[in-house]
Length: 332
Ligand code: 13P
Ligand code: SF4
Image (cartoon, rainbow, N blue to C red):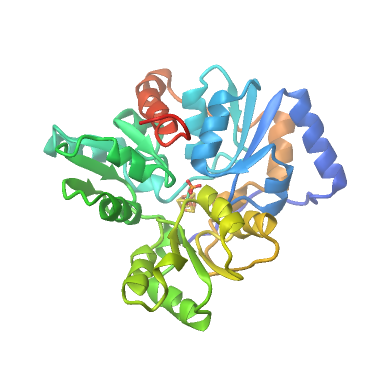
């Protein structure tokens, strides 16, 4: 794997940096959003830190005229689709996503041609062009609700994540759902044998597993075989992991997702020992949003995210349905 170098180095995330970032955020009438996988100093300076769904909802509802999205490109693009009149900045536009790269709009059009009556559900980790070909978008926290909202006799095309798709298929019990064979390189590498070994070393630990993980099926297998008590295996989005951290009575938790997640979990429940199942599970794209890149972004009003207006108009309905479904007290 080729490492991507960032030119924005040499800035310390010290008090002067924090003051300058907050001053520029106010000056630009901006809201600063950070995904749970961002570097701890970026999470701590943000107005809101959360999962993709929560951040999309905040971006849609914010009255700020500029959204600074500390996350990856498809997240900032989603904010732009929802708020075309706002300036949306990402501190480094090269922050992509291997999962979003695993399907193109042309791939999806060809797949749809084979299943002309199917409803297309795309994970939010897709480009604006793919969203424009989609009926309903979802995130890991509402994928099951989104698929459950589709009449049972309708065929579903689910893309691009095969592990999230398998999870949705398992939970909804549908057999008329076709799943694209894409994956995230970070989550796919968190494998079943590694999880089983960690779980056997600490049998009383909870397992928090993101549904994009290659080990999600193994986690349920461990529960099914009685190797780990079923109530200890929790398949959760990053936002739901934080909620569960506050609710669990476990003394230790094994976390199967990108390691940036540990920061919010430890803040939410400092008394719990959170450990990564795979401590090499770091998303190089998320980590391109450095303190220096954020400062440059605010100083230079860069990198601005643009989405072609026609594409954005076609993508908007599917994204709006995503933010409605599974909303507490609302949605379908
Ligand atoms: P969440 O929707 O759970 O925040 O996950 C986003 C993501 O990119 C996972 O890799
Ligand atoms: Fe994409 Fe995977 Fe990084 Fe999430 S962790 S942004 S799915 S490459």
